[in-house]
Image (tube, rainbow, N blue to C red; front, side, top):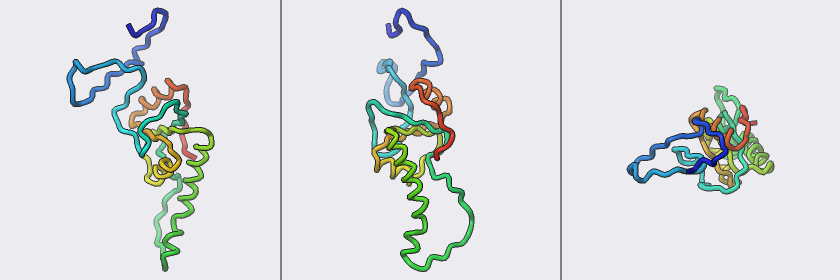
Length: 149
């Protein structure tokens, strides 16, 4: 038996994940959590993770405005989005400096944010379901942060 003698049992903690490619005889019980998606980025596995969870997208929060920009030379083109890039790197670096090595997000992951996460060796997990995000945070004792700032 998997359940210890003196333990409470919560049915909400049991999930069945169907993965294509095999039969019922290949089924097994896994201690932990299973999500049916790949991780984002280059880091695929992590042991003794320190996790931060966001319910928002992992992206720069700068508002986009419509307008016309006249770029006259290559230097202006290179420096056009430099400020946003540096701000996003500072945010990711601050997360790393806090000791975090795994980011879980409930929204999309921007290409630039993923680049900096790969640079600082951070595992990025994107969960589409808010229930999965809540379940993960409950199991690791984390609090979901509403904004990435």
